[in-house]
Length: 82
Image 1 (tube, one colour):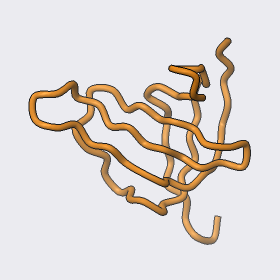
Image 2 (cartoon, helix red, strand yellow):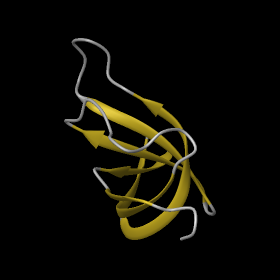
Image 3 (cartoon, one colour):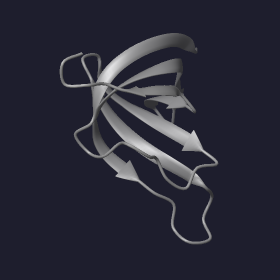
Image 4 (spheres, helix red, strand yellow):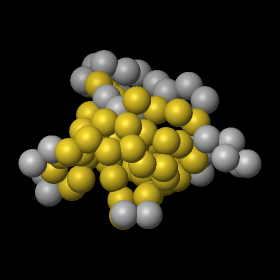
């Protein structure tokens, strides 16, 4: 079951695609509700984010391989004072 949500969390890991592999970036986000996996499909990199960056994401949460997941979420980098 999918449900649309808006969450704020901290990036714990980023996995970039290797040469010749599918173009997608995988991000592990730690939120108050628990860990969330973000898939950015057709991407080779993400600008302006790194491990430890706080972001707000919005999109449909689904369960992919037993893990709460968002595909191609809308993403906004949060400032320290937000």
